[in-house]
Structures are given as C-alpha cells and as structure tokens.
Image 1 (tube, rainbow, N blue to C red):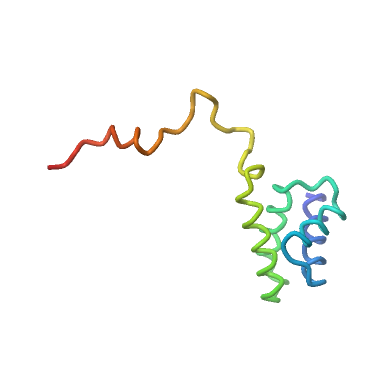
Image 2: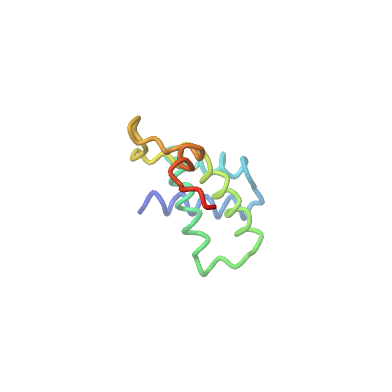
Length: 102
C-alpha cells in the first residue's frame, strides 16, 4: 500500500505540473523506479476515485495514462494467462459450434 501511495502522489504531482502522457509516465518512473505499469494503473484508479481531486484536467490526464497503460500487453499479462492448452478459440472455430438457423 505504501508503494501505491508514493506512485499516486507522483502521478498527482506530475499532473499538477502540467505533465501528460509519456512525460508523466517518465516522471512517475523517476520518482518511483520500482513502479510497474500495473502499479501505475492501480494508482491512477486510486486517484480517479479520490474525492479530494476535483480538477477535471488533472483527472483527464490521469485517466488517459491509466487507459494507455491498461491496454499495454505487460499490464494485461497477470501470470495467470492461457497456457498452450488453454488458447481461446478463433471466432471462426467458435462459430462452427453454433447450429445454423433456417
């Protein structure tokens, strides 16, 4: 929790200084070198739910950073991914199991 709070504070401080996108990410990484994309996304969500943050511009910047890094492959891989036997079916293969309606 202590690490998330430091990342949260770095996010808010950087956003208040006018940093956005990659500059904000770099700022957070400089202040919290151990912060991963996952921790930054979680701290961003904490910031978005903080009732003390009311500045829409800061919230928009933090939201954009969270979305960008949430969609990053590194964040989505939580170690509980699909093994070789658990690959999702392609849409074409999945559609073969659906009976045709006349």
